[in-house]
Length: 86
Image (cartoon, rainbow, N blue to C red; front, side, top):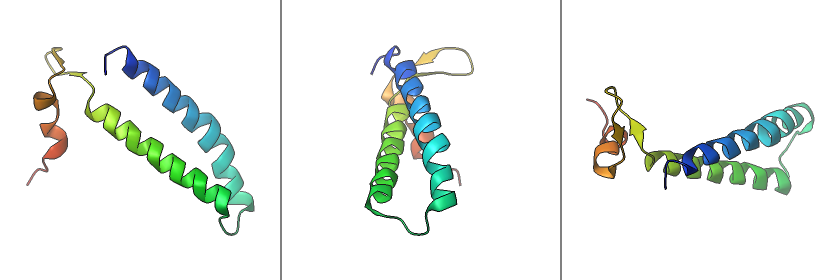
């Protein structure tokens, strides 16, 4: 995925989260829902899949290191995400 696609993905994801989920669904479910019906379960599952897609897109995205060098090799960019400090 190119560098041009990442800002577009971030913009779409931010718009979805702000408008659909945060501003509409969460207040409604907190105020009126006592139990979750099928539609709410589908919305929750969809939100989880979008979050997973966001993690995958960010995992394969290039980034600038502390020396402002673009790191776009997956072998260089993936180890910080894969290893846990001891």
